[in-house]
Image (cartoon, rainbow over all chains, first blue to last red):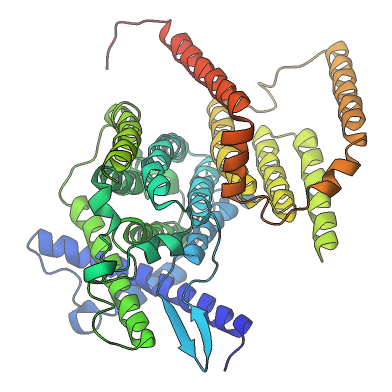
Length: 346
Length: 168
C-alpha cells in the first residue's frame, strides 16, 4: 500500500529518469542509425557496440572548458539553456504512459497529471519552449546566434498554427481534450469493442501533425535555426560545455515527447490490438501496454532519424511557403472534410 | 493556501509589471511582461478557469510575446539608438495611463457581488465554456470572429500593397 502522493512522486522521478535516459540513448541511436543508413559502423569504442558512448559524451560535456563570451549578457546566456531544458521536460507530465495498475486494492493511473485540457497544456509548453532558443541566441551577442534565434521563433510560430489546426478534427470527433481519454478511446479488442487507432480516421491530420512536430523540434528537414552550412551553429554557436549539452539534450527530449504525443493522439498510445481478448490480468495488460507505448515511441524516434538522413534541409522561403500556404489551408480543409464525413457516415 | 497563493501571484504580477516599465533594456521589459502573463495565467487557475489559463499562455506568452521579442531583437535597440522623448510627451503619457487606471478602478469597483455568484464547480471547463459561447452568446462570438477575419484580411492586404518584382 502506497499513498497517492508517494506514487505520484515515484512516477515523476521515474518519468524524469526515463526521459533523460531515452534522450541520452537517442544521441547514441542517432549516430548508429546514421551509420546504418550510410553503411558505416558508427560509434563502437566505448563498451560493447559502443553502448557506453552517451556516458562518455556526457562526461566530455561536463569536463570541457566553459566559455562565456565577454560581450554576452551573462544572466540570459545562462538562463537560455535552462529554459530550453525545463520546458522540454515539462510536457512529459501529461502523457499517459500506461493504463491503470491495481496494487493492494488501490488503482493508480500511469499518468502524472490528468488535466481536462491536456493537449492544450502540451501546446502551451511547446509554445514557450522557443524562449530558451531565443534568449540564448540573443544573449550570445553574435550575429549567427541571433539569426538562428530569429529563424527559430518565426518557424515555431508558423508551424504552431498548423499544428493547432491539425488536431481540431481529432478533438471534435473524440469530444475531449484530455490525453488519457483519447488513449482510452482507442482501446483495441475484437467483436463489440473494436476501435481503430485515430490515424485511420484522421490520416491527413496525422500527417500534418507529424510534419509540424518535426518543425517544432527543429529536426531536419526543418533544422534551419542551427543550419551549420549557413549559420555556423545557429543559436548555440557561442555555447560550450554542458550548456551546449543542454541545448542538444533538450532537442532529444523534445523528440521523445513529440513521439509520445504522436503515439498517444494517433497511434493508440498504450493500447495494443486484442488487448482485452487475451484473458490477462489488468496489471499485466498495463505493463504490456507501457512496453508497447515505449515501442511506439522508439519507432517514432527512429522515424525522426530516418527522415533526417532521407530528406535534405528546406530553404527558408520554402519552409515558410510550406507552413503558411500548404499546411494551414490543408489543416483547415481537413477539419471540414473530417467533420463533414463524420456527420454523414456516423 | 489559495489566499496565500493569490497574494504571492499578485505580488509577482505587480512587481514584474513595474519592472516592465522601469527596465532600461527593452528585451528585459519583454521578459518581465512574459512573467506577468504567467502570473495572470496563475490567477485564472485560482479562479477555476484552466482553459482560459492555458489559452492565455498559448496566445499571449507563446505567440504574441515571441513576436514582440522577435521585433525588438531585430530592431536591436540600445542606449544610443533609443529615441529621446520630450518631457511634454512623457507628461501626456502619465496622464493617459492615470486616466485609464481611474476608468479601470471605477469599472471594477462594483463587481464584488458578481464574482461571488460565479463560484460554480467546473465553470472553467471547455464544455461549460463551449456551451455558453455557442448557445448563449453565439451572435457576439460570431461577430467577434468576423472582426478578427476582417483584421486578418486587412493585414494581408497591407502586407501585399508594396509589390516588388524581385522574386527570390
